[in-house]
Image (cartoon, rainbow, N blue to C red; front, side, top):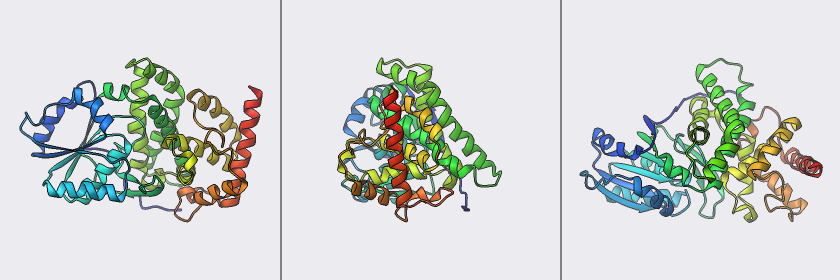
Length: 370
C-alpha cells in the first residue's frame, strides 16, 4: 500500500475567540474582496446574526443565500450559478458541515472565488479539511471530493457553537474519535518516517485522548451553557485535530472501515434520523470487531453509553431487520469504492457480516452485566 502524500494542512488564517466575527471587515479589505455571498442555514444565521458585523455598512456588497439542506451536486451547481450571476468575489460558508462543504465546493469550482468559513457547530472537521462529503438529494452518501486549495480564513465565535444543539456536538466527538481508530490501521503499517505522517499520527492521538478525557465534562458544561476550558478544548479538537489528521496525512489519514459502515447505513431509511457522527460511532465498533480488538470495544462501551451513542442494531433502529438486510448492510460497506479496503487485511461481505453479529453478542453480554 503506497500513496502519493500531498498535505493540505489547513486554512490560511484561524481565529477562535469571543467577537471573532469582528475581524471580518479588516480581513476582507486585505483581500480586496467587495462582493460577498453568505451561504447559510436558517437556524445557523439566526444564532450567528447577533455577533455578525454590518458588512454592508462597512462598504461591502453583501448577498445572502439559504442552504437547501443537502451537499449534493445539484445544490453545489445552484450556488455556483449564484456566484456567477452576482459576480461574487468571496463566499462565506456559515453553518454546519454540509453548508461548509457546499461552500467549499462552489468556491473552487466557480473559479477564482475565495472562501471564508464560519462553523456554527462542532459536529465535524469540515471547516478545516480540503474536501467535501457528497450526498444524493435523498441523503445517500456518494463519496467525497478533494480540492487543491483551502479557505482563506476560519472564524469561530465560541458563543455561537455553545448555543448549538448538544447532539451535534456529541456527534462531532464520535466523528473525531474515529480519526484515531481509522487512521491507526494505516499509519502503523506505512513503514516510513515522513514528517507529515508523524504530525498526522500525533493529531490522531489528540483525537483519541482529548475526547476520552474531557468529552463527558464538556457535554455537561454545554448543557448548562458554561464556556469552560474543557468544552473549548473538545470543541476545537472536533474542528481542528480531526482535520489535521487528513490534512497532514492525506490518504494515510483518511477514513477506513468506520466511515464505510456509515455510508452503508445511509441506504437504510430507519437510520435517517441519526447524525453522521452517530453512524460513524457504530462504524468504529464494527471496525474494532473486524480487527478482533474486543478489549478496546469494552473500554469504549461505557463512554458510548454516557454519550448515548449507538452500540448495536437496536440503537440504530435496525433491530427488526432480517438477516438478509444485515447482509445488504455488509455488502454496501465493501463495495469497490469503499475505504474499508484500506485495512491491512482482506475484508469482504462475509467478514463484515460476522463482525456485526459478533458485536451484537458482545454488546448484549456487556448490557446483561450492568
